[in-house]
Image (tube, rainbow, N blue to C red; front, side):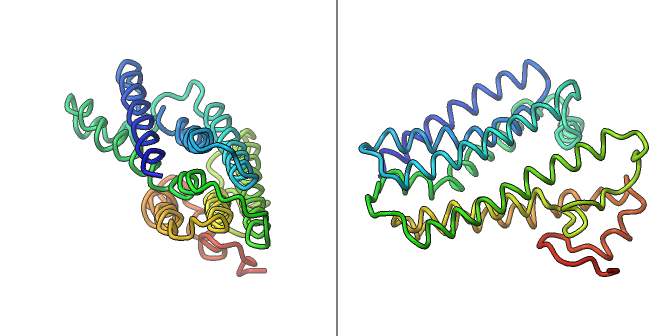
Length: 258
């Protein structure tokens, strides 16, 4: 197992350094966001092929992770195309000035590389253990939870993209479809995807990697997800306060004015 974890750490580190160099040349650190999903797919495939023969559970984890990663990468690439650097990173660049080049290596690429490796522990440990035990109830629950998350995440992104493409909606708050029941269906979907993958990995003996989905949950709820977005969105969307009053922040629920 240690060889799998070490190899993946080395590959992630190398990938982050290459991304940092490209981002520095392009003056666009937000390239890291596009790599986030595919990074997990790379780790999953490495973990599997480094530990043959491959069990059906490891194949399942790898394929589900890859499907999630490809969807996310394609969506973010399409959304970012021609948009320039994300405002979060642009603000960091303005704050640090010329020193941002080196600051970004540690606080953006280094930190996200470490988080990627840690959150992917269920995939890595499951691949290393490679338990041949047949798929069972916990695996099916995990697949079901993954599917719910994938639908919410992909569906929420698609609905928002259609909403924003209509000029009549400029400045308005999206409160239709999945967004009627949760203010962040994409984050809730990501939450379900990673807990679903964890359950499948746990069925294969990687139950002690529970800190990984807990870390992802913390990121989505308290750090880089809901909390970060909602700290500024009220300034850009005056109607958001009323939307927040009637709509759950994360877990879907019936609107309070219904």
